[in-house]
Amino acid sequence: MGKGDHPWSKKMAPLLNWPDKVITSKANGQAKEGRQPGFEDTYHGKVIPLVAAKQLVSVKQDIRLENLDQVIPYTRAKDIILKNPDHIVILDCPCRKGKANPCLPLDVCLIIGEPFASFTIEHHPEVFRWVSP
Image 1 (cartoon, rainbow, N blue to C red):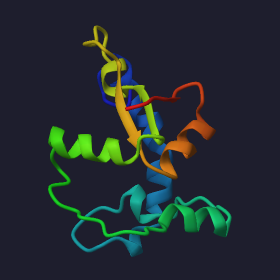
Image 2 (tube, rainbow, N blue to C red):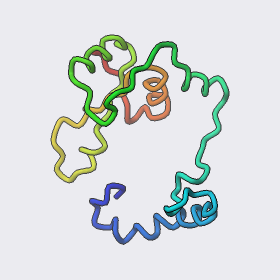
Image 3 (tube, rainbow, N blue to C red):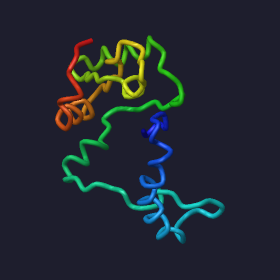
Image 4 (spheres, one colour):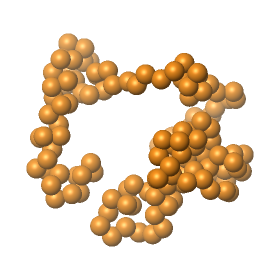
């Protein structure tokens, strides 16, 4: 339904968008000029302990951010996986799984590295599973 493919998605959209409209109507004065306020203009955070927050944002090495809107080339993806062999989690692709006749295999989405791999396993063990390179 979230992708709009489901037959009921158009009928349910007004009901599902209602909370967004109520919340964002209060944020009218806070939105940037020239556009309607969206849900992102309102608070939607989660409180976590300081230790967990530090683990989520601590980076102990340089990060190269480039071409984030593209698929990572195989050689680079292979290097990332080989550098993190004990921290690989796999799940069924939600995009494929949401289709009526999905292409196979379904278990193609990876989460690599800590603390993300452990976090996903800890919170959704029925969806994610550990794999080796």
